[in-house]
Length: 607
Image (cartoon, rainbow, N blue to C red; front, side, top):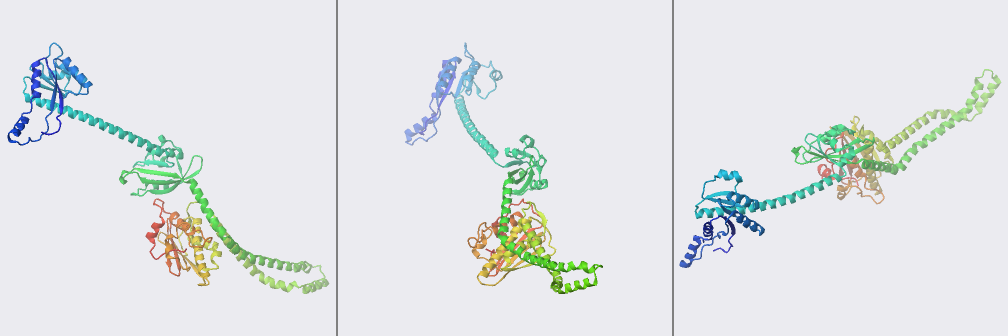
């Protein structure tokens, strides 16, 4: 026999006949014949009985009428015991009949499985079902019945009751799990909503038709449009004074595979203030869902500070060049002053002769007076000097005009260089920008190098930021001049060369700035565009020059900037700028991406 414990099942028999009670006791108290054969086999042949699962053990409770049976069920429920099945006689005079008894039993234990035992056919199944309803908890067993029928019904119904109890328990456990998970989900949803509400950025969700499905509180505050007035509307149809609505539509309609789109969009708020938003759009789920997430950050203050910083950098460069520029202006101003003083002196001398002219042409003047005037003119020392000065005055004036033009050119270049700009691209000629930059930087390079230019005459204009490009070109030219100056200090030559060329490309322009400053060490080439990196001595450089140039060319103009180093000779910077301003939808290029895409191993930069 197996060592496992047999299951105890409780059965209830309700019948007014004591003999029926005894019959049930015999049925459910009789040992299993198979168990007796196994025990006899072990006694005769000495072999151990084959282990088998123990049969259920039934514990009977017998009641003589319905009320007593109901009391058994009530007492069992108070003790935490449930009856697996109840065998109920249909006729139990003079008390409740079987149907009444069953109704009351189910009021106490709704899951009780009931077998109606009857020897009469005075009530059909349809009549019973009509009284207590059609249910799977009720079976009918006709008397007299076989023992095996009773055993099979008891076994099946008790197992059904057990499975129902397990099902209820599992269902309750599942409900608890679901309730727990729902609580966690509700908590997570609440936390997510609190998080979204606290995000200091505009957050908008758009469906595949471009209609707004989410509009967070920061969007309400930024655009001054309530949630109810925004939901279901198309973004471009909202009453927002966009600076360039076509640019916004281009950003919203761009559908990249994975990477987000990015651009800066301006609008005017209801107080008339111009504001700038850094907008990013990206698919919220899989690419084909059509749901788009738009996140916008107000960068108005950051852009104002950035503009101020850019302007301060330009003014810092002007300040560093101020002494040289003053010297460049002072030289023509000196000879302009000398020429003006020379002309003034000549006019002063000429005025002495001019004072005599009225008497010479006066008809009333006598011959004796005329002779006296002639002798006075002959004795005047200024006469021969006046003749020479009158010949030199045109040259002096021409030199003065050239000096004025030179000063005007320098002043115009300085004015253009230091102009804060509008922050918007304009049509410009790179040749003009380069000439202005060369003029401003003249005092930096004229003592160490000759600047040679080959600027293409029919260079096509581009969309660009003039003051920003001035700064970028200035940093590269000054860097080249410093590199050449280092070679001169080492006595390698007396004067170097900086060559600047421009040419048209299919979709833009190209500028090359070449110097013979000797190049830079290999170990420094990958870091030349890093902010604050410099190979110059302390106090001579901040390491910002080439970093600013890279930011202007690559980030702000979506162009390319790279360099080739010729060992021991010098460096060539190549700048390519698109002719038409590209959309900022693509991610910003970083230094590493430009290096790996366009720089061969042999190239580097001026330190």
